[in-house]
Each structure stands twice: as C-alpha cells, then as structure tokens.
Image 1 (cartoon, rainbow, N blue to C red):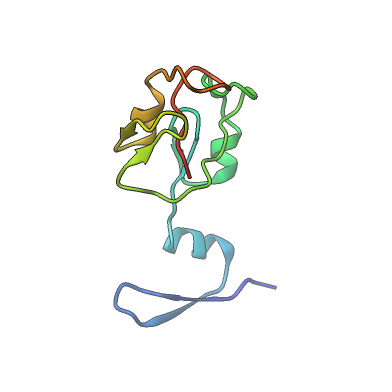
Image 2 (cartoon, helix red, strand yellow):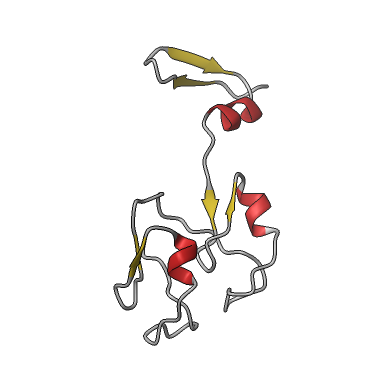
Length: 104
C-alpha cells in the first residue's frame, strides 16, 4: 500500500502524494553532519559516509536541529552562518572533541 499524505504547494492548494519517493522530492530537506557540516538530501546517504571530525565514530552524525540563519557553538557561543564554517574552527571548551559543536 502506498503512503498517502496531503501536502500544500507554495500556492496553498492541497496536493495528495502517493509514495514516499514523491513526498521526499516534493518536500526536499537537507540533512547535515553535526561534526563537519556535510550536507546530503537523505539521512542514509549522510550517515553512510565517513567523517574525519566525528570523535564518537567514523561516520557522519546527524544534526537534529533545524536549518538556521546562524549556528551557535553549544560550548563557547561562537557563531557562524553555516555548520561547516562553525565546525571548521577549534573550540577549547568542547570536552568531546576539538571543534565547535552546533547547539540545537
């Protein structure tokens, strides 16, 4: 059985989507690594790739917050407009690694 969802187009008109794939492409989301800021259109695609900045493992770790105009380090308060920019700098207050880590 196909998944049915009602979505709203930019015009505000309802639209029925009858499969997971169609729903995904009509409502494209970006998924980011919380350790390095890498972006992927699927969670599986993101987490299957390796990440050299993840102190807890060898793969990208999903950032579970929303996309924002500015990201803040949860340990020191440093700010950057991208997760990649934030995590590229070192953070002396991060107990789990050496880079800034975005707050949710």
